[in-house]
Amino acid sequence: MAAFLKNVCLGLEDLQYVFMISSHELFITLLKDEERKLLVDQMRKRSPRVNLCIKPVTSFYDIPASASVNIGQLEHQLILSVDPWRIRQILIELHGMTSERQFWTVSNKWEVPSVYSGVILGIKDNLTRDLVYILMAKGLHCSTVKDFSHAKQLFAACLELVTEFSPKLRQVMLNEMLLLDIHTHEAGTGQAGERPPSDLISRVRGYLEMRLPDIPLRQVIAEECVAFMLNWRESEYLTLQVPAFLLQSNPYVKLGQLLAATCKELPGPKESRRTAKDLWEVVVQICSVSSQHKRGNDGRVSLIKQRESTLGIMYRSELLSFIKKLREPLVLTIILSLFVKLHNVREDIVNDITAEHFYLAIFHSQPAVCGL
Image (cartoon, rainbow, N blue to C red; front, top):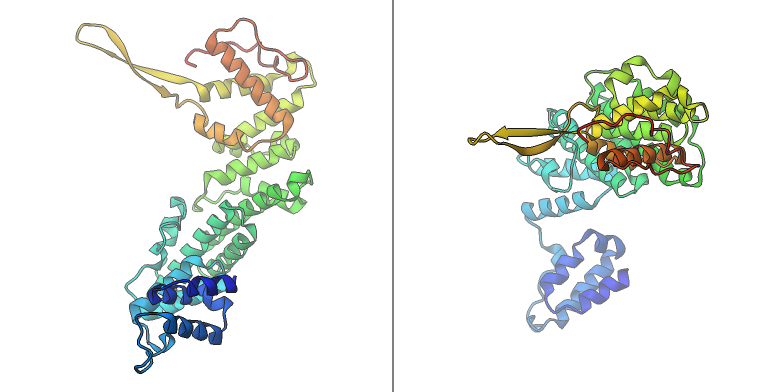
């Protein structure tokens, strides 16, 4: 890489571009001071705009940079760095240069969920606010691109920082680290079928049962936790051990319980499949639509629009997002059965699609529902 950068510089005619490349953090890291100065001197001699007979131009490295240039370079390093310690050092330097900037706004790629940003931006100390925001934003980005090792480092540093002054943000970081650990397992040993450690399962249960009204919560964490329990066949917990208040307050837990209970009922007689009926009714409510009509001046009634029903425990888009996170074959089979039945009802198909080994008949006795 160092040789490549040298060749790039030697192929350039304009010293301005050479200086731009040679001041980059990657260039400084890969080349020693002597190599960098030698390269710039070589470029200066090759440039047709430099008169070698006159007094040599002062070395680029000897020219003191203006404050704005230094701030710009530090901001550039801040954008690129994923090292928590380095991020902290850069922010300390930047805040020492100016107190007028909000450095959490340097990059529009730094995104923190709105449910968190209000708490973070309410931190009074500007340096702490910038550091917490940037560590979380970078950690979330690393998790999104599956760079789990850097995400864990960034979250751990943020957790250590907020533990000193904010119990609320401490719990937020513990929740995000739980989600990160779920993603790490699913992308790693989980793909090979290895069960998650008991500690991770216990933490998932603890999150679902958490009753802290002042803690900002992201919906996706509850969604991932319930999908995690279904994918690893934790049916016993979902059907028998879930606290009653969760079934009323968390729609994903309610849906997960119905799916887990239906899985357990499948080997039994059709008459005992009460949960399958409840699951059918829940999904029908989610997928139903309501029509809005208007009577014109001529007395005719016209359809204005069809709206998604608000009677369901969640919106249709939320149900589809949840389904995409499931991979347990029996759970997916039950969901397939539901949508086959919904399709048949909507299209008024008399002859149901059936398959002996896919349990597609478990919902066929359920009544049709209007408004699909």
